[in-house]
Length: 124
Length: 218
Image 1 (cartoon, rainbow over the protein chains, first blue to last red):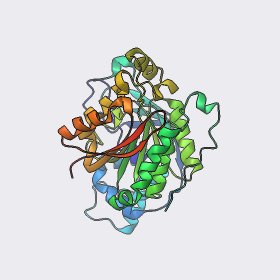
Image 2 (tube, one colour):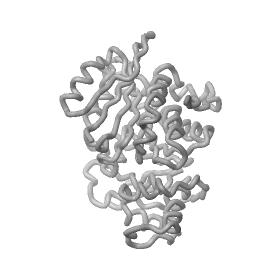
Image 3 (spheres, helix red, strand yellow):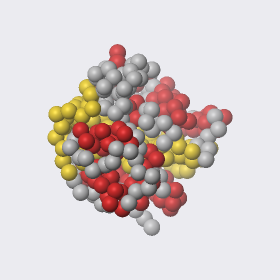
Image 4 (cartoon, each protein chain N blue to C red):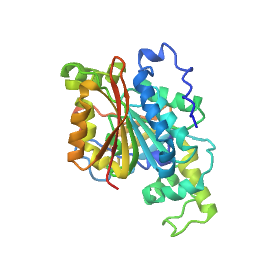
C-alpha cells in the first residue's frame, strides 16, 4: 500500500546520492484503487507539505492525468476530490521505485516499500 | 472518553517469533497518547511517524485517535515481518497505515525535515553490549526490538541527535524509556538543546517504564 501521499515523502538515501534522488520513478507497477474516507479539509491542510511537481509527474506515470501541471492558487471542491483520489486511494502493491540519480532500485512487495540499504551503501 | 485498545487477535505465535508482542511498554505508550487525546486532536497534526512500529499497535491507536483520513501516519521498521504485521493490524482495526521498511527515518529525509508533528518511538531500550545491539539491528528481526547497547541508549541517541531536524515547530516526540536509560539525564540533554521535556507516565513494575514527551519550540 504505497500510496502516492507516502511516495511523495520518500527519497533515495544511498551514500553521496544527492542529485535527482527524488521523486523515485515507478516501474512494473501493480496498481490497486481502494476507496478511502473523504476528508477534504485534511487534503487542504496537506497542500503545503506536497511537492506538487513530483506528485503530478508520478500520477501521470501511473496513468492519472486529473491534476493540473501547476498547483492551483486555491482549489475547487472537485479539484480537492481529484487530489484526494490521487493521494489516498491509489495504492502501488507491487513494483519498483528507481532513483533517477544513482539508479538504485527499491522494490515494493506485498504493499511494503523496501527502503533498506546494504551496509556499504549507507551514508552516515 | 476511553479509546479501545487496537485488536491484535490476528497476530499469532508464528508472528511473535519475528515481531515484538505488545507488552507493558507498548501499553504505557497508548496510555500516554490517550491522556493527551484531546490536545492531540485539537492540534490537528498533519504528519505523524512511528519509528519501529513492530505489531503496529501504537500507530493504529494514534491513527484511530486522530480519525480516518485526518493525518498521514507513516510507520517505519527495519524488520519486514513487523511492516507486514503493522499493515495487518491497521486493516484489522479499520484504518490505513503506511508501513515503510527502513532504518529509523532514513528515506524520509530530507522530505520530512521539520515536518513531523507527532513522532512515536518505543525504542530498543534494554542495556546490552554493543555487539548484541549491532548484530540484532543488522539481522533485521525480533532481537532488534529490544537490544539497545550501552545504557540501552545507542539507537535512541541516534534519533535524539536528529530530533531538532525532525520535529515541526511545536511538534512532539513520545518516547518510551526505562530507568537504566537515565530519563533525567535524557531530559537535561534535551532541555539544553532548547526542547521541552515532560515525563508523562511512570510505572513501577520490573522495568520501571517511563513515557517522555519532548516538544519542539513553537
